Length: 480
Image (cartoon, rainbow, N blue to C red; front, side, top):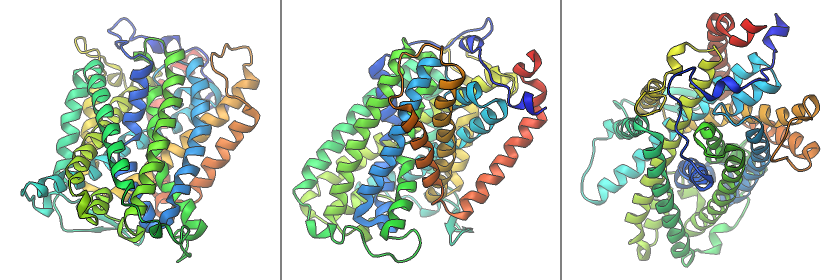
């Protein structure tokens, strides 16, 4: 039984078709993949999490938190790039774990990727509401707070009722983008490229304009004195790094579009690494400007960029630009996550670990349409009910666990299958791969106990599904 649970899948030829049905449309080139990565990365991290991490954990040293998270992501991105040339299909870290660590580990990783994509999209949608209501306030329209806040909040390790009804704007944006993803990858990818160009341009405008009003005194002390575990001091920097890691997870979404790339062996490594570099530069620039405009203690709001601008009347003209840029940026993140999650379900279904309904491709639009509808509905429900901070931490945990498997998998495959052709190889894999594992585990160690409890519960639910359905229908186990 254990041997079968740890059986590795070495033939992925059946993952590139729909067994006689319609297949996914290959429309993405290298810059399309890069735009997909930037679209997934530049969003809540730069417009919301930056301020919250500075105010609650790291202070101005949130720049160090971003650099630590970027280093961890960099190690992992190199490993993803090598795997993408070996296994150019849409399964991402799920497929990579299947090839190196066995079926039960692959299921565990795939189940955590539901957290990574589905719950992260819910978190982004929840933060989208903050800038949307700010924009409406700017033009004199005020929505009832009962319809813009989640009915649950996370306080002192417990979920408490807020008395609100639901986060209605978050639900609306998720459903609108779900319809777009249902229609087709060409349409959604084209819109994503446009949104990426707009939001990057707007971020550069904010950084350049805001830099003139930066007061270096706001950066002192750069590392505020510790006020307890995870708040300021070096423990706060590490807790901040674990939190802002949420900002980087989107680069992995590029690998889920492998079967819609024109040349995945070349396009995926290029898009993954280039998008990560561009996003890191933008994150550091924005974090430096925000913490320089006002005291870090004032940035713990749902729209910290607008908060910083309000402190400088001379920058009042920027507020509308920021609100529009934030809405565009956050929308593109939600869009990419809704693109990514259904494709993970599709690959798991083709392996027999999920029911065949998850493998259906729309005959006209050539998209996994039923998966898209299921994903969109789930994301909308989570965004309507749960607060941003809880969703963000759960997303980071699921992603870090998947990253550990990918970094370990590259090194394992170097020894078990050295003969496989690799168009891209991780340089100094003996160092990069273990460093990726260690850095991910280090960030995991700074997560709150309540998040670990939720993660364990999530894992138990996943194992029940696997042993209740996946074990009996696994195509690999049937062949064995």
